[in-house]
Image (cartoon, rainbow, N blue to C red; front, side, top):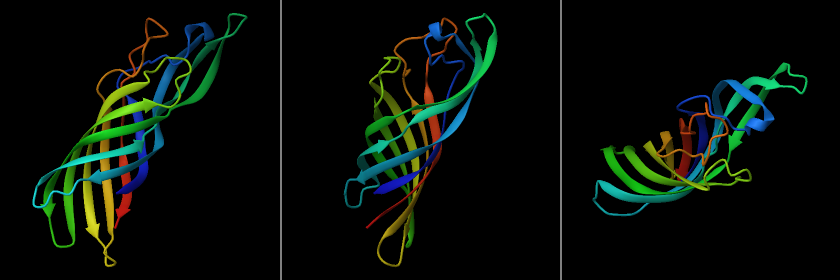
Length: 187
C-alpha cells in the first residue's frame, strides 16, 4: 500500500538549540511546521486473523520554524528567522488490528516501531538512528474497479531523544513528534 500526505511536525519541550553556541543564536520562538510524509506499508496476508503483522519503509522529515536573537560582533542583538528540517528514512514493523469490517470498507488500527535513519548528520547533533513509534488508523474503502482508497490519520512520536549532545546548558533534548493524514491506494 502506497500512501502520501502531510504531517504537522513539532517537539515536546523548548528551547532546543540547533546551532553551536559559538554562533551566538538564541531561540525565543519555535513553532510547528507542515512537512511531507510518504510510506509504503505491507500488511501480511493471514486469512481470518484480526491481528496481522505489518512492515514498511517511509520518509518522515521532522522540523520547525525558529526565530530569536543573534549577537552581532559589536555586542548588539539582531533578530533572526530560520526554517529547520531534518530528513529521516523509516524502517518499521508492527501489527494491524481489524477494528471494523463492512461490505465496502474496513477500519484498521496499526501500531509500528520505527527505526528512523537520519539522512543528514554532518554536524553530529542528531543520532544516525533513532527509535519512534507510530499509531495509525486506516480507513480502507473498496472502489468499483477493485482497487482501494485508504485514508490514514497518524500520530508519530520519538521514544528516546534524537540529539546526541546539547549546544547550550539551557537547551532541552529533541523529542520530535508529528501528526497528520495520508491518502493512498492499492490494487
